[in-house]
Amino acid sequence: MDSTDLTPQRLQYGERPSQAGMYLGLFHGRRSRKEDMDDWGFAGPVLGPLSYCHTTYMAYVRLRFIRGQDARICCNSVHLEVDLTVVEDMIHFEGAYYGDWTVFFVTLEDCRRHDDVFRNKPRINLYQWHDHLKSAPPPPEL
Image (cartoon, rainbow, N blue to C red; front, side):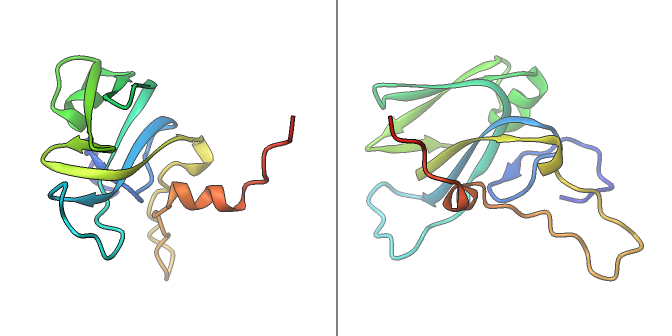
């Protein structure tokens, strides 16, 4: 994403959003349910910011966008609520199937940082949200 372009755009998983909030990131993508996967597949979109993300019986994932503009950009929908279908344990979205997804919260500190003109080395605005979990402490035992 070009930092000088102010037109809102849908992000790919791994890109930092410019707004704080909750997001759904799709990854481990494939074009066919039967595709033989030797690797992780491709990165999918980052959808949000969301007010909620709800899954029912692994049949669909319901998203509610905070703003109508984000629903249009992310899902080409005029509705704030959007249902994503789950097919054979994968989310089906825009002709692709995603075997992994993550719901994550982006703080202001984690948002996309502006490109600085004075830096010799540009800032890195990539972030793998699921990798952040590897360093998280284990939950306390009850």
